[in-house]
Length: 318
Image 1 (cartoon, one colour):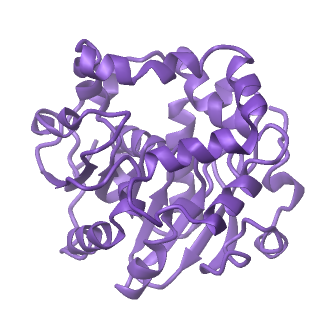
Image 2: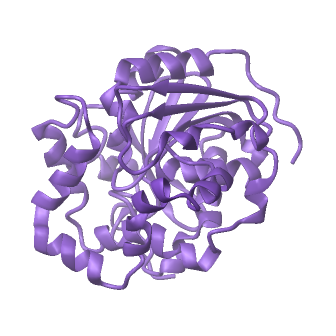
């Protein structure tokens, strides 16, 4: 596997802290680096206490949790928000097959171990939620409690893709798997296209500021940054849409927090989950869109702190 141009160029947290998209530079906690499943992952961290991992989605990086990190730290948690492989300051493998969901889940399990914790509360949004669902069946012992923000359970999503309402919203999944064309489109549109994408997905006024735009511009400016983010979709053909293990019962106490004005995912994704997740609590946020944690940060923080602040859940054997 060829090393990318992410964390390999700056292998320790002190060096990465000098980058404009580091936690230190953006004024949110400290920076660290850990070896995951064959790649170095950069992460932002703040606080002490039970470990909470915040997994971002597409197109995002650790900064997507900027409104949650301090609140969770103040509530008594050790918060770690990694850049997932290929993103921002983490290492960027060149091969599409290095972005398979099993490897992405392995990264998270290895990160928990590298941080010296037996297990963690895992919170995932969008692709981070997809990884969290997969982690729950691939490495159940590393999860205490699971929180999912606007990320469909794979079995429920498979059902809904048979219906026009969700199928028409999911056009981008196939488009992003096309060779070269998505990169050309994004290159032609430049920053304005990315800005429109982020603005369309954030519904609350002020949810995406000029400062935020500048941070995202910097995070996605590096060589191969867009291709690495798209590789998450392109790797689906290496794993297949169906993963039988994902139909297994998820044993963890689970919170599903759903922004109901999501233009990419129908609200029905948050229904009927008890078939796969018996211990599930669903909280709907009617005024929020896909980035529920940015559109409704106070509601998100209250829901997470209330859920994660309960007695630690017992994780049954896989």
